[in-house]
Image 1 (cartoon, one colour):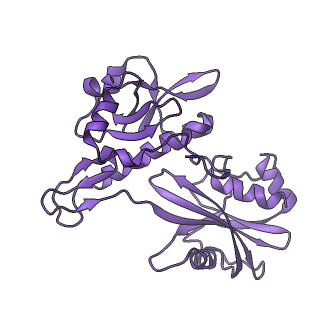
Image 2 (cartoon, one colour; image 1 turned 45 degrees about the vertical axis):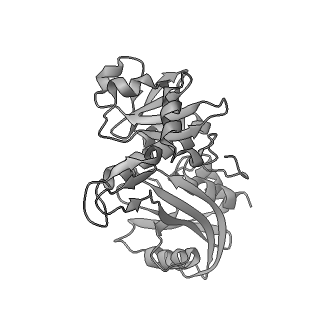
Image 3 (cartoon, one colour; image 1 turned 180 degrees about the vertical axis):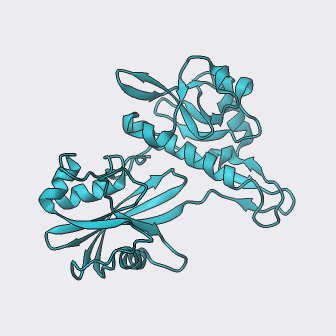
Length: 302
């Protein structure tokens, strides 16, 4: 469902999730048997793709592939209905070789920058759901194996009748600013020169603004005095919701916690523009499909 503009990848899905139909097993069965229904195969969380003209595209297949080659021990997910009125599904394929040379399975994170932008919300939703199912096969209430219902959107425990719904992990991600410069950090595993926004999980009982202040203080020793909401981004690695903010801090006297970050540095507005354009002589920022890029871009253009 398309809502007001959001600049981030994995948002503004073109599908109608048709969530009211998930409980209707007869409807789901009929939708799967529809001649126009589409199936997106996955293998170990990797979507099925093909390449054309240097770009990557989702390789949709007919839904009879589910009966022939899907791993029936893993969920069949009803993703929604596309603009043509066709049902869209996703499943896990046990043996990639069964599909021949129609395409290839590729890790989503490196593939995302080259994928069809309007399809990222679809493939991201599917990947996040598969990841959640893989981590929640047993009832959290009594420990009994649970089963998949409602088109892959619920797990039900037949032993204690508990129902478990997919969860997302809220993460605050922020660019601290002071005057005409912003602070970015880098982690040791990152490629040389990469700097990005600060980030951290929001804790129970904590408001977004409080989490921003805590994480900024913990990671960089900077005290936040103002928080400005920017945008959000579903992030399917594994199943987070990134809550992006710009935050003004009291001063530029950072103290980097080296258990959290390897280092950090201030960038002027002009340097931030060079980062966004991938023209900075020493450093670089995350690509445009990451919310950190959009945060930095918004600030640099003010």
